[in-house]
Length: 310
Image (tube, rainbow, N blue to C red; front, side):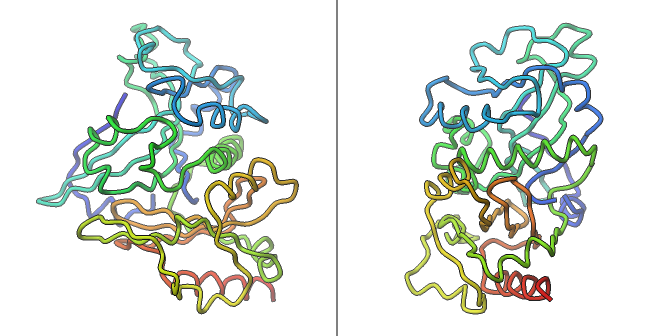
Protein backbone atom coordinates (compact mmCIF):
# COMPACT_ATOMS: atom_id res chain seq x y z
CA UNK A 1 0.00 0.00 0.00
CA UNK A 2 2.82 2.38 -0.80
CA UNK A 3 1.04 5.46 -2.08
CA UNK A 4 3.15 7.38 -4.57
CA UNK A 5 0.65 9.58 -6.37
CA UNK A 6 1.54 11.98 -9.13
CA UNK A 7 -0.86 14.89 -9.15
CA UNK A 8 -0.87 18.23 -10.94
CA UNK A 9 -2.15 21.48 -9.47
CA UNK A 10 0.60 21.56 -6.87
CA UNK A 11 -0.15 25.17 -6.07
CA UNK A 12 -3.62 24.22 -4.85
CA UNK A 13 -2.14 21.66 -2.51
CA UNK A 14 0.31 24.13 -1.03
CA UNK A 15 -2.32 26.81 -0.58
CA UNK A 16 -4.63 24.45 1.30
CA UNK A 17 -4.17 23.90 5.00
CA UNK A 18 -3.04 20.36 5.49
CA UNK A 19 -3.54 20.58 14.10
CA UNK A 20 0.08 20.13 14.28
CA UNK A 21 1.98 17.17 12.80
CA UNK A 22 -1.23 15.09 12.70
CA UNK A 23 -3.84 14.98 9.95
CA UNK A 24 -7.04 13.08 10.73
CA UNK A 25 -8.53 12.15 7.37
CA UNK A 26 -11.39 9.79 8.28
CA UNK A 27 -12.35 9.65 12.00
CA UNK A 28 -15.47 7.58 11.25
CA UNK A 29 -13.27 4.64 10.23
CA UNK A 30 -11.80 4.58 13.73
CA UNK A 31 -14.96 3.00 15.15
CA UNK A 32 -14.39 0.00 12.88
CA UNK A 33 -10.93 -0.79 14.20
CA UNK A 34 -11.03 0.09 17.93
CA UNK A 35 -11.25 -3.56 18.96
CA UNK A 36 -8.76 -4.86 16.43
CA UNK A 37 -4.98 -5.19 16.36
CA UNK A 38 -2.61 -2.56 14.99
CA UNK A 39 0.40 -3.87 13.07
CA UNK A 40 3.52 -1.77 12.52
CA UNK A 41 4.93 -2.72 9.12
CA UNK A 42 8.71 -3.18 9.35
CA UNK A 43 11.48 -4.64 7.19
CA UNK A 44 12.91 -6.70 10.01
CA UNK A 45 11.91 -7.38 13.60
CA UNK A 46 15.39 -6.59 14.96
CA UNK A 47 16.10 -3.14 13.54
CA UNK A 48 18.12 -0.84 15.88
CA UNK A 49 15.99 0.24 18.84
CA UNK A 50 13.12 -2.11 17.94
CA UNK A 51 12.34 -2.93 21.58
CA UNK A 52 12.39 0.73 22.61
CA UNK A 53 9.93 1.76 19.89
CA UNK A 54 7.51 -1.06 20.67
CA UNK A 55 7.72 -0.57 24.44
CA UNK A 56 7.08 3.16 24.03
CA UNK A 57 3.86 2.34 22.16
CA UNK A 58 2.65 -0.64 24.16
CA UNK A 59 2.84 1.20 27.47
CA UNK A 60 -0.58 2.82 27.96
CA UNK A 61 -1.63 1.94 24.37
CA UNK A 62 -5.37 2.63 23.99
CA UNK A 63 -5.75 3.40 20.28
CA UNK A 64 -6.74 -0.21 19.53
CA UNK A 65 -6.76 -3.54 21.36
CA UNK A 66 -3.06 -4.34 20.79
CA UNK A 67 -0.03 -3.19 18.80
CA UNK A 68 2.67 -5.46 17.30
CA UNK A 69 5.31 -5.51 14.57
CA UNK A 70 4.62 -7.22 11.25
CA UNK A 71 7.59 -7.75 8.87
CA UNK A 72 7.31 -7.29 5.11
CA UNK A 73 7.81 -11.00 4.49
CA UNK A 74 4.48 -11.68 6.23
CA UNK A 75 2.61 -9.25 3.97
CA UNK A 76 1.01 -12.12 2.09
CA UNK A 77 -1.14 -13.15 5.04
CA UNK A 78 -4.87 -12.41 5.07
CA UNK A 79 -5.84 -10.18 7.98
CA UNK A 80 -9.07 -9.38 9.80
CA UNK A 81 -11.41 -6.53 8.80
CA UNK A 82 -10.83 -4.59 12.04
CA UNK A 83 -7.03 -4.75 11.86
CA UNK A 84 -5.13 -1.50 11.31
CA UNK A 85 -1.61 -0.61 10.24
CA UNK A 86 1.18 1.90 10.74
CA UNK A 87 3.81 2.35 8.06
CA UNK A 88 5.92 4.99 6.34
CA UNK A 89 4.48 6.27 3.07
CA UNK A 90 5.23 8.91 0.45
CA UNK A 91 3.20 11.30 -1.67
CA UNK A 92 4.74 12.75 -4.83
CA UNK A 93 3.23 15.88 -6.37
CA UNK A 94 4.42 17.25 -9.71
CA UNK A 95 3.70 20.48 -11.55
CA UNK A 96 5.70 21.29 -14.67
CA UNK A 97 9.36 20.75 -13.83
CA UNK A 98 8.78 20.90 -10.06
CA UNK A 99 8.33 17.75 -7.99
CA UNK A 100 7.66 17.70 -4.25
CA UNK A 101 7.82 14.55 -2.14
CA UNK A 102 6.03 14.39 1.21
CA UNK A 103 6.86 11.62 3.69
CA UNK A 104 4.58 10.59 6.52
CA UNK A 105 3.59 7.85 8.95
CA UNK A 106 0.22 6.53 7.82
CA UNK A 107 -2.41 4.91 10.06
CA UNK A 108 -4.82 2.94 7.86
CA UNK A 109 -7.16 -0.03 7.60
CA UNK A 110 -8.59 -2.27 4.88
CA UNK A 111 -11.19 -0.97 2.44
CA UNK A 112 -14.54 -2.72 2.11
CA UNK A 113 -13.37 -4.03 -1.27
CA UNK A 114 -10.14 -5.37 0.29
CA UNK A 115 -12.25 -7.30 2.77
CA UNK A 116 -14.80 -8.49 0.21
CA UNK A 117 -12.08 -9.79 -2.09
CA UNK A 118 -10.17 -11.33 0.82
CA UNK A 119 -7.03 -9.43 -0.15
CA UNK A 120 -3.75 -9.94 1.64
CA UNK A 121 -1.86 -7.02 3.12
CA UNK A 122 0.45 -6.60 0.13
CA UNK A 123 -2.57 -6.53 -2.21
CA UNK A 124 -4.70 -4.14 -0.14
CA UNK A 125 -5.58 -0.63 -1.33
CA UNK A 126 -6.32 0.63 2.18
CA UNK A 127 -8.31 3.51 3.71
CA UNK A 128 -6.23 6.09 5.57
CA UNK A 129 -7.50 7.22 8.97
CA UNK A 130 -4.72 9.61 10.02
CA UNK A 131 -1.11 10.54 9.26
CA UNK A 132 1.93 12.15 10.90
CA UNK A 133 4.22 14.49 8.93
CA UNK A 134 7.85 13.37 8.78
CA UNK A 135 10.83 15.69 8.46
CA UNK A 136 13.54 14.03 6.38
CA UNK A 137 17.14 14.57 5.39
CA UNK A 138 16.45 15.55 1.79
CA UNK A 139 19.74 14.24 0.46
CA UNK A 140 18.88 10.77 1.76
CA UNK A 141 15.32 10.84 0.44
CA UNK A 142 15.59 12.25 -3.07
CA UNK A 143 13.18 9.57 -4.27
CA UNK A 144 10.66 7.38 -2.44
CA UNK A 145 12.47 4.33 -3.78
CA UNK A 146 15.74 5.42 -2.18
CA UNK A 147 13.96 6.29 1.07
CA UNK A 148 12.20 2.94 1.40
CA UNK A 149 15.29 0.97 0.40
CA UNK A 150 17.35 2.63 3.12
CA UNK A 151 14.84 3.11 5.92
CA UNK A 152 13.33 0.86 8.57
CA UNK A 153 10.99 1.91 11.38
CA UNK A 154 13.76 3.54 13.46
CA UNK A 155 14.27 6.12 10.69
CA UNK A 156 17.79 4.98 9.80
CA UNK A 157 19.17 8.44 10.54
CA UNK A 158 17.09 9.92 7.73
CA UNK A 159 14.22 11.25 9.87
CA UNK A 160 14.65 14.26 12.17
CA UNK A 161 11.38 14.38 14.15
CA UNK A 162 11.56 10.71 15.07
CA UNK A 163 12.37 8.71 18.21
CA UNK A 164 10.53 6.34 20.57
CA UNK A 165 9.45 9.26 22.74
CA UNK A 166 8.26 11.47 19.90
CA UNK A 167 6.39 8.52 18.39
CA UNK A 168 4.63 7.98 21.73
CA UNK A 169 3.55 11.63 21.78
CA UNK A 170 2.29 11.45 18.17
CA UNK A 171 0.15 8.43 18.95
CA UNK A 172 -1.16 10.00 22.17
CA UNK A 173 -2.30 13.01 20.17
CA UNK A 174 -3.76 10.86 17.41
CA UNK A 175 -5.69 8.76 19.95
CA UNK A 176 -7.16 11.85 21.58
CA UNK A 177 -8.23 13.35 18.25
CA UNK A 178 -9.79 10.13 16.97
CA UNK A 179 -11.70 9.57 20.21
CA UNK A 180 -13.05 13.10 19.88
CA UNK A 181 -14.14 12.33 16.30
CA UNK A 182 -12.33 15.39 14.97
CA UNK A 183 -11.41 15.65 11.31
CA UNK A 184 -8.59 18.16 10.93
CA UNK A 185 -5.44 18.99 9.02
CA UNK A 186 -1.88 19.00 10.27
CA UNK A 187 -1.01 22.56 9.38
CA UNK A 188 -3.73 24.45 11.21
CA UNK A 189 -2.51 27.04 13.71
CA UNK A 190 -2.90 26.05 17.36
CA UNK A 191 -2.70 28.30 20.44
CA UNK A 192 -3.41 26.98 23.96
CA UNK A 193 -3.03 30.20 25.93
CA UNK A 194 -3.37 28.57 29.36
CA UNK A 195 -0.55 26.11 28.67
CA UNK A 196 1.61 28.65 26.83
CA UNK A 197 1.49 31.03 29.80
CA UNK A 198 3.44 28.42 31.82
CA UNK A 199 6.45 28.96 29.57
CA UNK A 200 6.89 32.43 31.06
CA UNK A 201 8.25 30.66 34.16
CA UNK A 202 9.20 27.21 32.82
CA UNK A 203 12.02 26.12 30.53
CA UNK A 204 11.37 25.41 26.87
CA UNK A 205 13.43 22.39 25.82
CA UNK A 206 14.82 22.49 22.30
CA UNK A 207 15.97 19.22 20.65
CA UNK A 208 19.18 19.97 18.76
CA UNK A 209 17.81 18.61 15.47
CA UNK A 210 15.47 21.64 15.39
CA UNK A 211 18.51 23.88 14.93
CA UNK A 212 20.00 22.06 11.94
CA UNK A 213 20.03 24.13 8.77
CA UNK A 214 19.21 22.70 5.35
CA UNK A 215 20.38 24.37 2.16
CA UNK A 216 17.23 24.64 0.05
CA UNK A 217 19.20 24.28 -3.20
CA UNK A 218 21.66 21.48 -2.39
CA UNK A 219 19.87 19.74 0.48
CA UNK A 220 23.07 19.82 2.54
CA UNK A 221 22.41 19.77 6.30
CA UNK A 222 24.57 21.79 8.71
CA UNK A 223 24.69 21.68 12.50
CA UNK A 224 23.89 24.89 14.38
CA UNK A 225 26.83 27.24 14.86
CA UNK A 226 28.14 27.89 18.37
CA UNK A 227 27.23 31.56 18.00
CA UNK A 228 23.70 30.75 16.77
CA UNK A 229 21.58 33.81 17.62
CA UNK A 230 18.12 32.60 16.69
CA UNK A 231 16.97 32.88 20.33
CA UNK A 232 18.07 36.51 20.65
CA UNK A 233 14.44 37.70 20.88
CA UNK A 234 13.16 34.78 22.97
CA UNK A 235 13.49 36.20 26.48
CA UNK A 236 12.28 33.24 28.53
CA UNK A 237 14.29 30.22 29.68
CA UNK A 238 15.24 27.58 27.12
CA UNK A 239 17.69 24.70 26.94
CA UNK A 240 19.08 22.82 23.93
CA UNK A 241 19.05 19.04 24.45
CA UNK A 242 19.75 15.88 22.47
CA UNK A 243 17.06 13.55 21.15
CA UNK A 244 18.13 10.96 23.75
CA UNK A 245 17.59 13.49 26.53
CA UNK A 246 14.19 14.35 25.10
CA UNK A 247 13.25 10.67 25.10
CA UNK A 248 14.21 10.43 28.78
CA UNK A 249 11.84 13.29 29.56
CA UNK A 250 8.98 11.80 27.55
CA UNK A 251 9.34 8.15 28.52
CA UNK A 252 10.59 8.41 32.11
CA UNK A 253 9.75 11.90 33.33
CA UNK A 254 7.34 12.19 36.24
CA UNK A 255 6.38 15.78 35.43
CA UNK A 256 5.38 17.29 32.08
CA UNK A 257 7.79 19.59 30.28
CA UNK A 258 7.33 21.53 27.07
CA UNK A 259 9.58 21.03 24.07
CA UNK A 260 9.98 22.69 20.70
CA UNK A 261 9.29 20.57 17.63
CA UNK A 262 10.40 21.81 14.22
CA UNK A 263 9.16 19.93 11.16
CA UNK A 264 9.77 20.68 7.51
CA UNK A 265 8.57 18.98 4.36
CA UNK A 266 8.94 19.85 0.68
CA UNK A 267 6.64 22.86 0.85
CA UNK A 268 6.21 24.10 4.41
CA UNK A 269 7.62 24.23 7.91
CA UNK A 270 5.88 23.75 11.25
CA UNK A 271 7.01 25.28 14.56
CA UNK A 272 5.29 23.52 17.46
CA UNK A 273 5.44 23.24 21.24
CA UNK A 274 4.51 19.86 22.73
CA UNK A 275 3.52 18.66 26.22
CA UNK A 276 5.90 15.75 26.88
CA UNK A 277 3.45 13.91 29.14
CA UNK A 278 0.27 14.08 27.07
CA UNK A 279 1.58 14.68 23.54
CA UNK A 280 -0.73 17.70 23.25
CA UNK A 281 0.35 20.42 20.85
CA UNK A 282 -0.07 23.71 22.71
CA UNK A 283 1.32 25.88 19.91
CA UNK A 284 1.71 25.43 16.17
CA UNK A 285 2.49 27.77 13.31
CA UNK A 286 2.77 26.84 9.64
CA UNK A 287 4.80 28.76 7.04
CA UNK A 288 4.61 27.95 3.32
CA UNK A 289 7.71 27.74 1.14
CA UNK A 290 10.09 27.93 4.11
CA UNK A 291 12.87 25.64 5.25
CA UNK A 292 14.71 26.41 8.49
CA UNK A 293 13.87 27.55 12.01
CA UNK A 294 14.47 31.30 12.13
CA UNK A 295 14.76 33.98 14.80
CA UNK A 296 11.38 35.34 13.70
CA UNK A 297 9.69 32.02 14.48
CA UNK A 298 10.98 32.15 18.05
CA UNK A 299 10.12 35.83 18.36
CA UNK A 300 6.54 34.95 17.35
CA UNK A 301 6.47 32.21 20.00
CA UNK A 302 7.82 34.61 22.62
CA UNK A 303 5.15 37.19 21.78
CA UNK A 304 2.41 34.56 22.05
CA UNK A 305 3.68 33.39 25.45
CA UNK A 306 3.87 36.99 26.64
CA UNK A 307 0.31 37.70 25.48
CA UNK A 308 -0.98 34.45 27.00
CA UNK A 309 0.32 35.38 30.44
CA UNK A 310 -1.69 38.60 30.60
